[in-house]
Length: 273
Image (cartoon, helix red, strand yellow):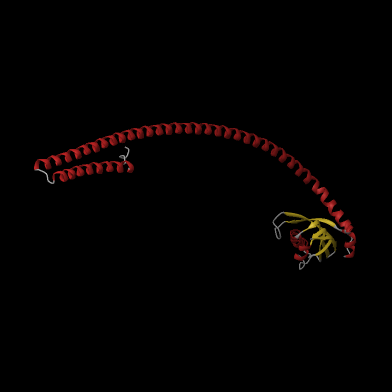
């Protein structure tokens, strides 16, 4: 419901001005009568008071009429307010329906897009799986080829390295053609584990045994493994090797520093950083 209408200050001031003018006229009329007659009779005084009362009654009626007009205006404003509220409510409902419809359309579009993307990703995944399957098969084929070549090429690579470093081997009184490969088996698991097999390059002259570890690029793990192989050789033959040589085309300077205190001599073609 609308709030009661507040009387406009200018209008209220105008009404008060009219009331003062009416009262002034009444007082002036009484004063004129007093000046003319110097005194009033009882009937004249009562008649004057009656006229004043009538004028105030007329003013009351005017105010009452104005109140009714303002009351009517309040009702009109209240009706207008209700109409405006209804219109805004109807507009709000329409907007809510439109937004709801738009939301539903957007949801449908996003759902369709999501389904399309899912299908595309699924197709891509299937293609990638097929490609990876093909690559895996190719890798398996390559591994088989490498394994079959490893045994044949491994010794050839070692012989090539030994030949390239033959001058340095001679400086250490080793003829590379005298180095032979020997297979060692840890049957009792004394060093590695039971049944472990490995190869070692050996120059054996009676009890004077020299072992060689030949690598293209030797690192600390190769040296550690070589020391364990030397232990296995001693366990198998009952002879401790006199010298251990790591022969490598290249070796890192940090590896040299790490094995400097170990009972291993290094013959290298190049020291790299």
